[in-house]
Image (cartoon, rainbow, N blue to C red; front, side):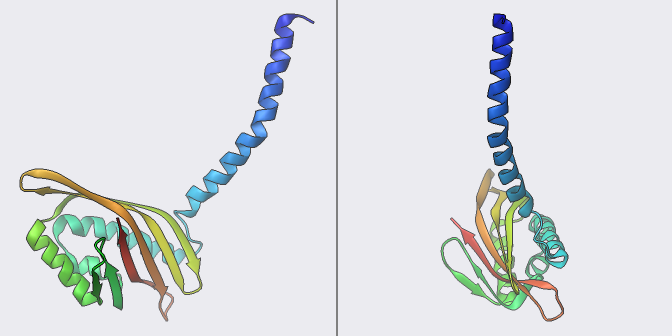
Length: 166
């Protein structure tokens, strides 16, 4: 057998041994990424997509009412410093005060990485980033988040807890 034929057979053998582990890694990673986008509950998926897209737009216009709309009446917002704001009305007030003191965001990103449903609760986790202009300088605040959604009596989903993580 020629040397080039041996090299070809050896290369083919290496690829045949490498493909199953690579395929396994691919199959493990891809579903994990897809599960971040879909919970299996269409109403929940729509509620998350709507709340996130409306949050992005409302942060740029200062619309605290729209930001607070997906929260339950008894919701709790926990800021990265551990402070707790209780109730949809208080959460709306918090955002109004933020807009008055810091202005509107110039850009907002939300990367919802994972959604897990457990009965009437769902847990959305990811990373968010808010860019704004503070004292003439661009400021980017970002961090992880955990949002707990609760299925309501009619089947709709509302935010029960929203935790900003450092």
